[in-house]
Length: 396
Image 1 (cartoon, rainbow, N blue to C red):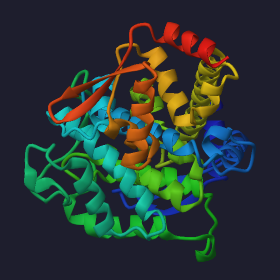
Image 2 (spheres, rainbow, N blue to C red):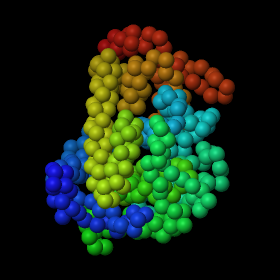
Image 3 (cartoon, rainbow, N blue to C red):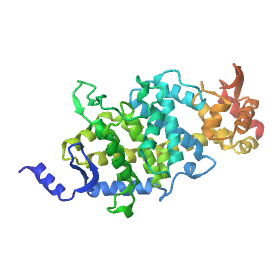
Image 4 (tube, rainbow, N blue to C red):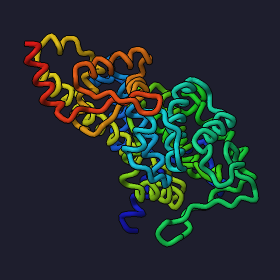
């Protein structure tokens, strides 16, 4: 008996059953060795607010901007995982300016953005087949070749399978469509269960397994991945992991799509052991949280750069945090353009507040205001850094 069989034998004694079955009828199982327990503890600390969180996220005056950025990032990268080809720059401009999508790739991103927003609204509601269908409708509307497949489970005559993009090898054949009604009810019961219902299951593990099961059952003709990831966010929000609203797991998954796929395969090929998928996704969550912390640090430094240019002048004291953030973005993106609507969405503010912010910056000569069609567009002046230095001197 080699080392693997010894490890397998020891591990099998620690298995715990999940109330979910593979298509063979066997229970899915999992186990939580010490390294996974440590990762769960770290997620508990970082994602539920039990340790010091960056002020930019906890401060009500600035956190909406970071939430919007996160929703946009997750919408884009989750769509790119499924084949969307639009660039980040174009996609962000579309969402910030509330422009209607012009092709399927943009529509996928547009839909994902609204699905992520929808999840925030329904976080306290129990999961149901109808809710899953509504979420699928949101993420797939106007993106499927067969429009009748939007917002419904696949039919018995619709053969769905997962193939390797490289050589078209069959990777996974999901359960028959005739089994879906019962399997979806079981998934909903699992998602809605609490620790008072019997065996305790860590809420993060429950959320990850929910993600896994939608991918495994593949209940839709298309849009399974986007729906699965959206339901993961729903489950994390339901269990109080509010920090996950600001984290994009798809950004990390997109960097390692083959590992994402293999975590499914390993589970299916090794006694339905979901530990592989749990372990991989815990690593993804932790990396995504670390990425957020790094992002917040960069943003804080950018704001400080603007503040340093402005100094402690009267002008600086009359700038609000939104205007400072906009100036920071303009310094990094000299070809950037801004509108009342894009600024309003970015900071989750009213239209009059957005209008006041931008007009004030234009009055200071930091942006050029131009009329495009029926709307105003604000363009960063070429010498914005010099202009800021001049305004600093004038205010001293």
